[in-house]
Length: 141
Image 1 (cartoon, helix red, strand yellow):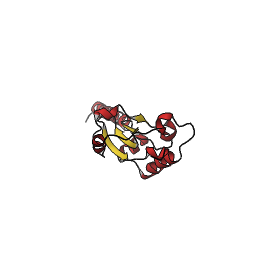
Image 2 (image 1 turned 120 degrees about the horizontal axis):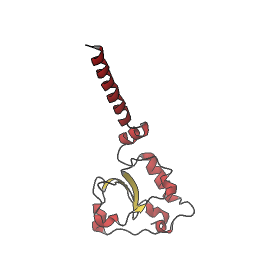
Image 3 (image 1 turned 60 degrees about the vertical axis):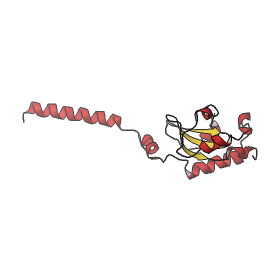
Image 4 (image 1 turned 90 degrees about the horizontal axis):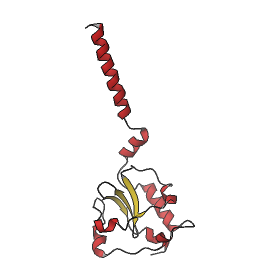
């Protein structure tokens, strides 16, 4: 093989290697991808503690919880799809709680629906996990 051919092959190899290196996600992204699509035990504990002992200055919307109609309640299950009518009733997680919890992939979202806490896939509205009747603990419901 000629020297020029070797240089061309080596240059192409190095360019390909550099392109590959920039496509590899950071270690944080790798951890998020390997994370199971559910509330981890430590997250469940933090969430329950937050709602058992609400911090001062809790937004008024979190103090009042209404139960869902039985037909909609039945549709709320792990790996189920969030009904379109309920998507408007979703409340964001309080920032004070969100910062206590481990990071999740950007395509997921933690939300509150009635007295339930839901881990939701933003793209598909699929319920990845649910903790039932936890948010009602603020008022003892």
